[in-house]
Image (cartoon, rainbow, N blue to C red; front, side, top):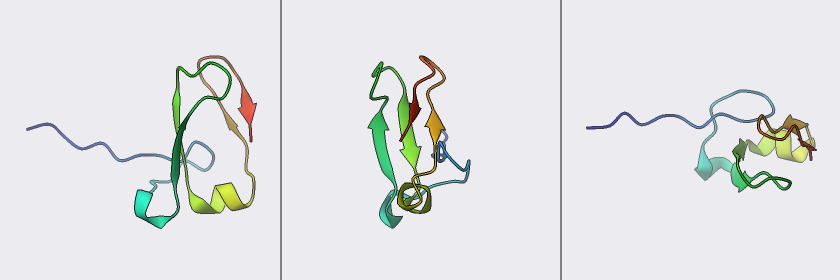
Amino acid sequence: MSEIKPQICASCGKIVSPEKGAVKFSCPSCHKYTFWRCEMCRSFSNTYKCPVCNFEGP
């Protein structure tokens, strides 16, 4: 049986829940990294950075 790994917000580092407004998306620049962002960081437009290509969003 495999362990379920919690998803972490790319902006604030907290565990996110898909049921509570979080989103999952690929890096808009390289498409090689998958981000999760919580509802609060999305609403405040908090930044995130891709560890693969160094793209910074939002």
